[in-house]
Structures are given as C-alpha cells and as structure tokens.
Length: 169
Image 1: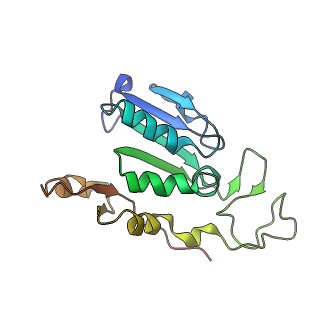
Image 2: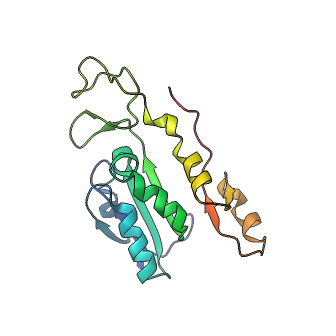
C-alpha cells in the first residue's frame, strides 16, 4: 500500500474469518472483520456506498473459494474497483487443520486422517473462471501492464487478474 501511495484515511481493508482475518488490524487504514466468506460482499457494499475509497478485501482459500465462492464470481461479474487478495494455505488454519478446498488430494489433515479423498480445488483455476464469467473485460496478467490497458479509451470494463498458477492435481 505504501508503494502504491494509498492514503490511509482513504483506504479500507475488509476480511472474513480465517487466516486473513487479522490483516485489517495490522495496517493503518480503516478496517473491518466480517463473517466467514463475506469479505467480498462487504467490499462491494463499501465501494457502492463510498466509491471514492480504495477498497481492499482479503480472504483465505476457505473464505474465498468455499463458503465465499459464489461471492467471488459475482464480485468479478460486478467488476467494481476493488482489490481482492486470496491467501491460499491449503488448509483451514483457524480450525487447526481441517481440509480446505485447495488441500491437495491425499494430504493427511486432522479431518482427513487417511488422506484427503477429494481432488484439490486448485484445479478450478479461479482466475480462469473469472475470465470466462465476466464477459469481455480487458484481463491483465501483470501489474505493470495496467497503465497501457487503461489508455484504450473504449470504456470497456477492466478486470486485473494475475496469471493463473499451474493447476495442482
């Protein structure tokens, strides 16, 4: 945020419950910790109510891909100017080891003693879902491309999605 020169009094960081939930308390901005899976819904509400604010939502893999999965897709469809950071640690850390949607198949956790029987949700490639679901946005893989695409002048919506990692099967 310092590198982007975001003014703390003009920035809000929102989180759900889980590995990301403490972040709003660690930064000098306005912040709010909501319920599990709802960081993006909070962020959408803040952005609609106060469009001049820099809105940042943070969530974990469970928060953003499991319980908040539909909110992730709808936030992309709405295409508001909100930054979303998904922290994928492959486990529900707050529950001390429950398998999450991105837990690799076969991994032993406290809830999958004999190994995770499900395929990893990483194969969903969430950023590819966003690219398909949003329609025809300008998708940028690298932050340094942002200025170039904004100069297109055609009024088309922009969605900045980082490069997808290689799917883990």
